[in-house]
Amino acid sequence: MNIIVTGSLGNISKPLTQQLTAKGHTVTVISSSADKQAAIEALGARAAIGSLADAAFLEKTFAGADAVYCMTPPNYTTQETPVEYYSRIAQNYAQALAKAGVKRAVYLSSFGAHLDRGTGVILGSHHSEKILNAVPGLTVTHIRPTSFYYNLYNFAGMIRELGFIAANYGGDDKVLWVSPSDIAEVVAEEIVRTDNAPKVRYLTSDERTCNEVAAILGKAIGKPDLAWQVVPGTVVREQLDAHGVPAATAAALVELYDSIHSGILAEDFYNDSSATIGKVKVEDFATEFAAVFAKSN
Image (cartoon, rainbow, N blue to C red; front, top):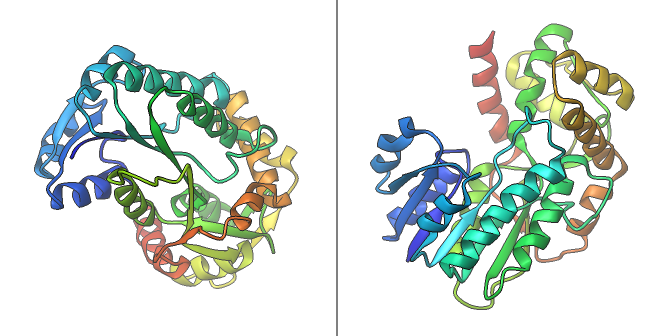
């Protein structure tokens, strides 16, 4: 198949590209950085250098494709709200997919995307799904992974400075965690599916309380008493503001954490008996976390 992969050489797109080229597919990887071209080609793929903000570039690149993997890169510096940013990128995808006549797409969405309010950053995925669902003649599967393990890297500085993790979720809150490598496997499976494609596919890798996660990470980095405290959202908002996070993004992150704490983000996941359970567990990620933590000291 002729497959387009967005996301450059990111945590999901790189292993996805490796899997697809290994199976003999023709893969074109979209990247905004010309510096990545050689590394992309080293994987046996073609490089298309351009921006997801350029609908004409996307249409040209999508021409002749059998399937496209679409993702929205995180952007924590934009002054747009998550809905504005995600919708803008999704509209570009939709226009390009329609004009290029692509029949199959897989979109990286998120658990909680079924909700139309109260999910902060995730709300952008809800609107993106609706936009892509409206493309005539397109069969699209929305991959809804749970919380990414690598989001835990955001707490590394706090652990070093304060000796604990603090957010407006934590403690005994149960959180579903997922590895990019597990996501890549699911996307690789779906992108080549030619019939009976599901509209939504949930996946996770592990489920632990935040206290359990803190204990596992703490053991890995030599801080066995590491704790994960729950603090008010106002405190988290003040911290984000102090670190220069744009107001719209800060508000959306606090709302997202609230939805994890209340449990609403995961409700639909638990109602789906077909959810995929990946291989990578918290203990596996802790080894990676410890290596990164040691280098950043």
